[in-house]
Amino acid sequence: MEGWVRLLTESQSFRAELLKNALEGVGIPAVLLNQKDSSYGFGELVLWVPEQEAERARAVLELAPESS
View 1 (cartoon, rainbow, N blue to C red):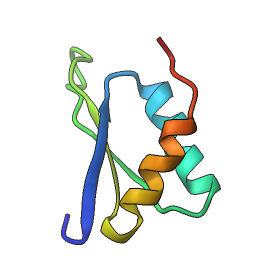
View 2: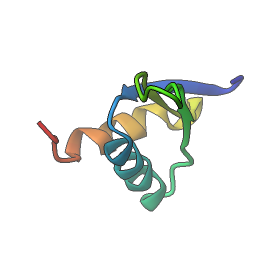
View 3: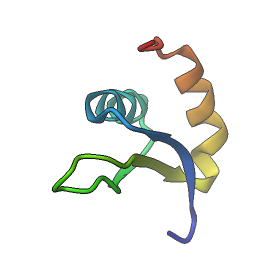
View 4: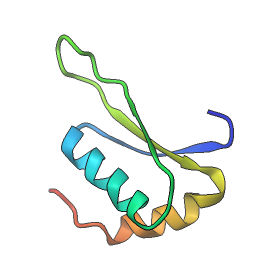
């Protein structure tokens, strides 16, 4: 994805959606790429943001509560 950077990977779908929504809530566009196997459910979701928003996105996610 040209112009976008891979911000993080997450194995839990609900957490990936929460993080994506947190970014979008502060005006940062975000895309989740689902790389999970649909039959067996293993794999990861990858969260991408525009390159120019990457630093701000990392700062937002640092404030997000941890799930573990």
